[in-house]
Amino acid sequence: MSVEVITFGCRLNAVESKTVRHQAVAAGLSNTVIFNSCAVTAEAVSQARQTIRRVKRERPDAHIVVTGCAAQTEPKTFSDMPEVDRVLGNGAKTAAKTWQETKRSLDFGIGGEEKVRIGDFSSVCETASHLIDGFEGRARAFVQVQNGCDHRCTFCIIPYGRGPSRSVPMGEIIAQVRRLCESEYREIVLTGVDLTAYGADLPGKPRLGTLVRSILRHVSELPRLRLSSIDSVEADADLLVAFAEEERLMPHLHLSLQAGDDLILKRMKRRHLRADAIAFCEEARRLRPGIVFGADLIAGFPTETENQFRNSEMLIDDCGITFLHVFPFSPRAGTPAARMPQISRNIAKDRARRLREKGEIALRCHLASEVGHRRRVLIERKHGRSEDFTEVKLARPATPGTILEMTIAGHDGKRLLAASPC
Image (cartoon, rainbow, N blue to C red; front, side, top):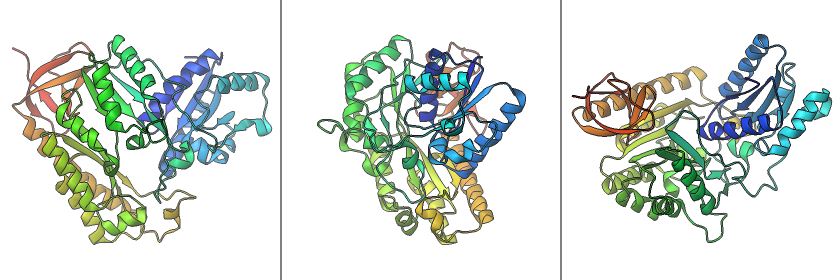
């Protein structure tokens, strides 16, 4: 492959990597490996550096270009690497002009200050210039509707890597969803850095619920619409009504909870308390019985005591969380949390392990409760996903992109097992 993109981090990066590769190829780049980096943890940055070194050993004649959140927040980390030819900021990585200029620089071997091209986000006011028309070989497509974040959680470096919150106009989103449906994608996932901030910068300030209901109303041929991670405290009333009334809106939400102790939440500068998270889950479950929740939790945040950690641990049961993403706290230079009194790294890792074990128990309980039920499953190559996003192992191959109804015969502790059709 003349241009390869290696992606780290979130689904939004995966969406943008498609456009990055398209623009790089269109600009005429060849023999180039582009790293779309993640800055959410120090481990993510370290992993990118290690992969860059490995790729350069394997392909010593290849050009190496680094972009993404980590390139934006710590460009010197990558520009100091002899393996790297160019470091490009996150704000312009999907623009055609960026890759045309990169092509000229690489062709002429321009170095020095030209090695790093990082802009700031002070004047960024729009997104969506890089809407794409799908993902090859996948039944599910991701549509970016929002980028950036206006909040400043004390642990998070992402606002510095992606800039202020900005939204894609509804008309553009609906048009893209329609194009993806015409390309036979059966499920669309709406993504963003701060998805529930959608619309605050648009005329009329439409909310996420308005967007969801507009998509379902105007694209009647779309079988399934799903949301990526949301901040439950910002969920608008229309969004909750949509879950109650719209069967094509999938009964699955991934929540940005981060902790289950009020004092830790305040030190994180989150905008909700423990009771708010529990109340949201109860209300969502009342409106949409059977809805399944995932959540992000951070273990070992600075000053976290054992009792405070246990509050986070108990939140898994109190909210009824099924799919858990656990992160041991990772101090990021430039964030307030990095200057707070740190707890032992070993303690943080041990607490993360305990949360994951608790999450595995919750997942097994959910899987067991599904046995014997009939579920509609979207086929994705060798497996599928039920409406609540549970992975289903197929009894026999099926055509990717089809939605089949099947009986759940059992589970293996990690996924459901479909019964063989009669």
